[in-house]
Length: 311
Image 1 (tube, rainbow, N blue to C red):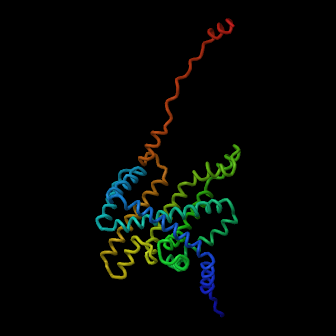
Image 2: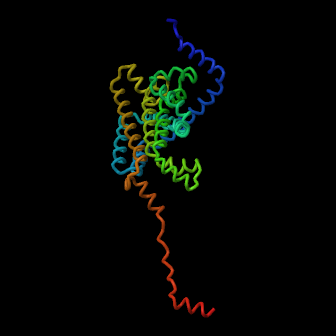
């Protein structure tokens, strides 16, 4: 049986790819690093308690007071463990990675839902991306971007992208065909049907994909600490290298708190249960239509007759 050096071929291809587009990757790395640093600086500029209260209020507005109170308690625990700065660095990385994954994944999911050829191409690619161990993606990323935040973000996006594509396609395909046919019967075009019918009805499934993207991005952001991703990942790697159990558990508990907060937050956005969330109540209060004007009294028959006779 002859040997099949697939890894050697991939390495040769990546070497050529990097040498050819090295300037492009430098620009991408600078933009990514600047974006993450900006969000991280924004989160770290105020007092930690102020940011914790703001995030807790966000949970209260989106869902209810229980989520707001639980979020505040969890974030205060992070502050008490002296993990606030790395936690905000990790949150910044997760936010940017999630935005990039959704910007790429949702349009690809829409394309796969509307084109059988695109769906057949996307499925094996998504299978490959999901089943490949997360740490393996660090190798080509290191070759392209070297050690740093940019490489950590690209690896995180690759690892977290598939749920956005899969669940967007699934949500659109699950929309009842009769509803789409009714829209077509009323003269709606493909773009209008997508915007006004398919996406609104598929939104719970799409939001489930958003939730999965955030969870995978958070888990990969910790692994990305091996390549200089910063944040809680660096703390976990440092704890492993020094066998510091206290530091490791502090960083791990901080990751769990962030994961629960983001999971409940996105889960509340994706549900459509009436009466849940102060944000929906406030929106309904300020967008509620005003009272109808009083009806105009109709003239009786004699008045109408006299009016016509006077003419």
